Length: 239
Image 1 (cartoon, rainbow, N blue to C red):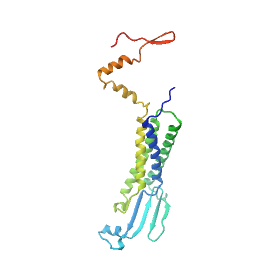
Image 2: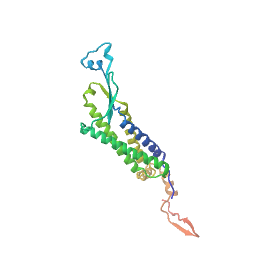
Image 3: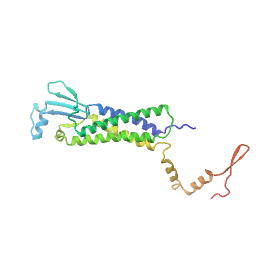
Image 4: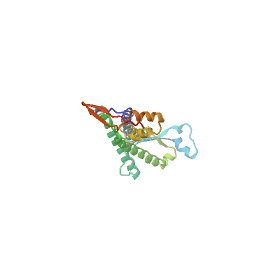
């Protein structure tokens, strides 16, 4: 049995899944999904006022993520603590569970990609792609729900709270995993859609080329055996 190698597209998808998992993991863990810096001016500008000289002094600096947050008050050290689970809303649980599913499935897909690229021969990667798609879809769902919760957040409407870098890293990782899932499904050399594509080529090729193919590549011609040698029997009728 001939052992096939993975195609270039499949190998690119394996690398993309590994990078996507790392980005999703870093984004989900880092407490920088939202950031806030509150000064006197940021508060008074809500009422259309500004305080000279001392208005730029920061009163509060905050950044938080899915699992914990850090707060630093003026003239005090930064304090970090885990987010309260008791006061969590349904949306908070959807975000946390979705991010956990995203990271775990991405980890499984990345480990499978590393194993297949190092220890296994080529073959189908459709199931691998479907699993990666579920991982990416979970990440996209987390981003959508979190963005909606931010839109309803009072301090975000006042421009006191902004998205942090971890949020954008998580978006990029989820998008990368989703894109690579399609590559795994359609870049396989044994893709079930391949016969459909090959059969459709006959309707596109010129007539002369089709005739040449029919003359020289006949898959169903009979054969005879003589002295242990196989001789094809060409049909006397060419068309």
